Image 1 (cartoon, rainbow, N blue to C red):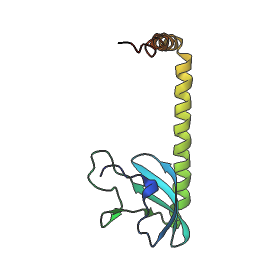
Image 2: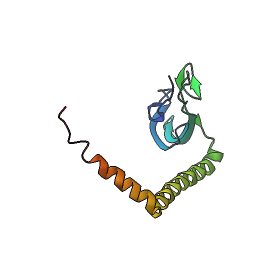
Image 3: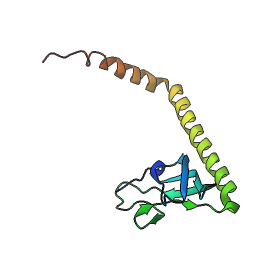
Length: 124
């Protein structure tokens, strides 16, 4: 097994309730979840393509969450919020930079216009 979707991590079933993934970076994830009926923050390594395990932490081969201590939860939550905002800002700036590149836009328009006739040719 390679990558474990953090939305599916619900072990140990006797302790985990709601799992709400707040940030899925791909390699790692952060979630708000209910642990013994109490809301907590959990974090885990999801694994990666080519991995043979179930990410980390795990218990007896089942993927689990690391429960962030209460004393650290707010700092972790704030840092992950900043990471998410920075990622959105980087994507938006990338789109703005592409839009400013008139030559690239012209080439993209030419290329897509050239595809229009390709889809209608069904004879052969």
